[in-house]
Image (cartoon, rainbow, N blue to C red):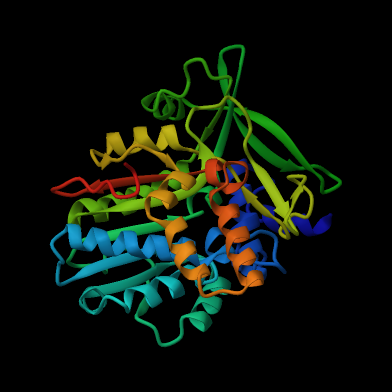
Length: 354
């Protein structure tokens, strides 16, 4: 357990979001710095890894948005947290089928982990992509941000109300280098911030994506400056829940949160209702939140699978439909995953949402 000390370098008592940040993203010891977490040999699998059909539908959505904007000569696409680069690889394959569109685009990848950057560079070698650290480098043309399972991986703050007093959840190391949770009374500044989002009333337990909102601040200011939008796909809830949604996974199985520290992924459920409030405050318009099943079906994923399967043998057909079911079946990813689109555009763009 001594090895856990390295996540408490500056202080032995830290808020839970800071602890998760250290565990996941520390440049030397962080989970994303040490291993490739995706795929069969990793700890979890994402939609682009399950089926290329997912990325194809997103590619068609992006091309349609470009057409909707009267085919601008310069069009920027930013993928947030691109994982293995698999989604981007499929996007590019589809984009190449639309030469006018392909000539007009710049593709940027926004990635925090140097380890994953190396993997992406390997998978996207020689392609029309650039890695960026901030969005100020994008000078002109509309910008569309794409985030699949981006927001759930950003650490969250947790608060608990006891006798009407609000406390923040912290973690500390005891004398035996074991992790202990404790509560620390919050200040008036925090209470004010949470009240802005209507989070304190009737809630005994609150999760707040402070760091996630900082990322969204940068994204929304780029959208306001250049026009465009943000498409987020993630697993989460439509209503505020008064419960702890932090979860950990290792080898495709649930992991106890403080077990395998630094060797297991930690995420939380995205509160889409809170996202809606956030975008409203930022004066961005948004479409109604829909499920991944709804969005992909509206984009024609079943029809695409049918066309492809005509040329397939039985085994290939079984495989494509098995993977399709994982994406759209309500009992699998279909209902749990939600899609939100926030934008600043002259004309509303509702494809995939109505």
